[in-house]
Length: 187
Ligand code: AMP
Image (tube, rainbow, N blue to C red):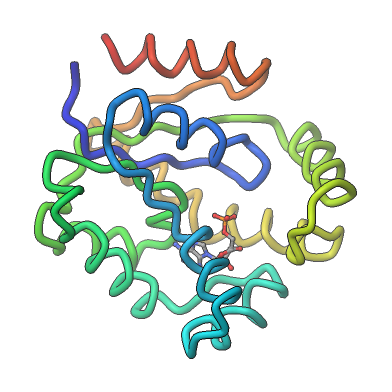
């Protein structure tokens, strides 16, 4: 069994959020989703929420310093002492650096959930039609995919060079993908 400080990496629409939640529950570590933290902040009408809302609706990234500070505080909480699963963080080189510098921020495993672009767009458009998420519309979807390619995808190579990356096929039912991830982690 690998260590329990895990990063989930993958493009929007890869099913990362759903799987991250399941894997975190199975490993009994907190699921820390920056997207969720920002959505909660928007819903609460806090200062952070007001700053994040417009950025999220455009499909852009909330500034690195703000995001990293939020994660640093969260992983310092007692429930994250024995591990955590980061979902949607880091998303830029600066965030990866910030994570390295955080107390307890040395991650053990980076799980990359891969789905080809055509399937991603199909899934995201379907979700856009069904969900109430205000950042799920066609223009924002394209922008989020572009942001992933430009800013987040380079992290794949970074973690690969550190020997921490594990690739997983994200195509299949929720149960199939979950089984694949758990099997991979057990190795
Ligand atoms: P997600 O639920 O992970 O797709 O995140 C939804 C939105 O929240 C993103 O499109 C960004 O606007 C914002 N967000 C989430 N995580 C981060 C992050 N690590 N850095 C900057 N912005 C983020």
